[in-house]
Length: 405
Image (cartoon, rainbow, N blue to C red; front, top):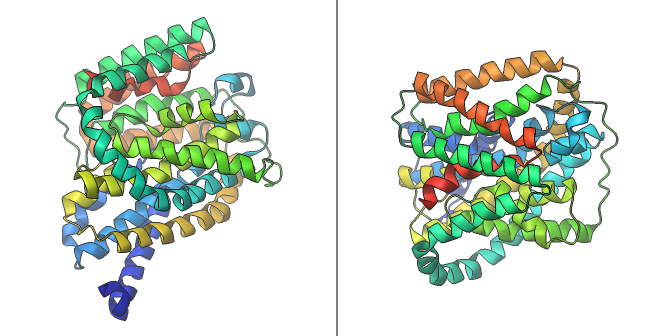
């Protein structure tokens, strides 16, 4: 109740939420900087901030939420492949190649905003249900994750793609088994082997393939061409999938979104963009409730909150999420179109090489030279799916296989 009756505390909290929005904006627009690593980086500096832990936690949570809104912007603008590779491109890139990048930005913003609106009232009943189910799920987690691995392979559209998916799952899984527990030697306090693994498996291959493309083509208007019912259903299913990500280790947003599309009445890149954005943002809400109910943080942001000793005052933290979501929605609309336009004027080869060099610097800063070697190997593995026409999410074997084992 203190936050409601003490104006100075309210203003301090709002100031920290605003600071978190600014930090989340910067991190979300930086290619290759994952929300989890940024959150752990903040946690490393949090003890030096002269403020109550609750306000610091509100800023960290706000930064994480805004990051989930804005990371779609560099994801759409960078690594746009040659049009001939459109069938194997990421769904968002397919929309950019069609000149619908501005629409994709708005679909993502709507998916994230609706996910917050859906997740907040659903969090309590779902958390109560998960408290009962989680012991059973945890006892059979290897079976659950094994089923996910099998589903990733068998749901590919062609025999060749299934072969590629099996190779990608196996190679990335072996890479995860060998490297996840390796010691690191970066100069930043939030190093994790996930930095070179994810940058190599999912970032660098897209940039390498984009060197043969023509960059971001001219984009059409920003009108959203799907119905409200489509948006609502895609965001709702994405929200429920976000609950799965929030409670189960090893299940990524992309995997959850792919599963969500199975039950959606309409499929395609627009559904994937809405659902994935919904998963990413709803995940933060459900993971917060999972931390309170189960004492187990499921995302980098919540790990950072837990490590910093932030008191879990749900009204304050949920208010921070809501305010950050509103800010993130506006920022996508304000900054996204400009980002696409600027990137569209840059030579794609120069842009891809520059971002690859930046990723190398980022990897070394977080994990040292060992991480750079892992990044190189992960990049080679990350090139496998597109060669077979398989989905890139099959490289999530890097987490699924070690956890299942």
